[in-house]
Image 1: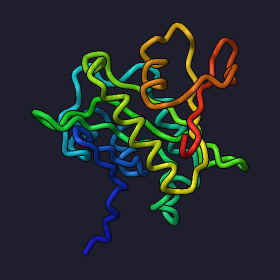
Image 2 (image 1 turned 90 degrees about the vertical axis):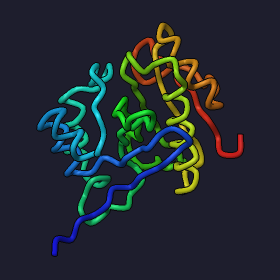
Image 3 (image 1 turned 135 degrees about the vertical axis):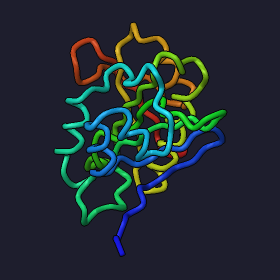
Length: 181
C-alpha cells in the first residue's frame, strides 16, 4: 500500500485552493496535462497566469522548508486556484512567499489567468489566504504591486489591505492587513 499524502486544501464558495507540494510542482513542470491530472481539473486555455513561469515553479521546489517531506502540514506555501463551476478549472495561483517574519508578518502573491479575471476570483482566494494565515499565527499579511496594476490594487483594497508605503522593488507599493483590522 502506498502512503500518499493529501495536499493541504482550502475551500471557499467557488474555489478550491490546493497546496503546492513536491508532487504537484513536478507535475506542473511536466506540463499542463500532468498538472491537470494531478489536480483533477481542466487547465485554463490561457495557463499560466502572468508572473508565473517555470522559474517560479523551480523557485518553489527549491524553497525548502515549506515543501520538505517532514513538514507536509506547513501552511506557508503556494496554492493552485481551481475555479469550481461549471467544470473544475485551474485558473491561477496564490501563496505565501515564506513563513512569517520575526514580527509575524507574511507576504503573499497572487495571479489569475486573463480569461478568468474580473470575476472576483483573486479577491476570494486572497481573502481565504489571509484567514488561513491568521489561523496559523500570523499577525499581519502584506502584498506588493506596482501602481499601474490597478486590478491588483483593487484586490488588495477589497481584501482590507491598506497602503503602507514603498515596496521592496523600485516603484512598487506595499499594502498590509493587520489581524483584527
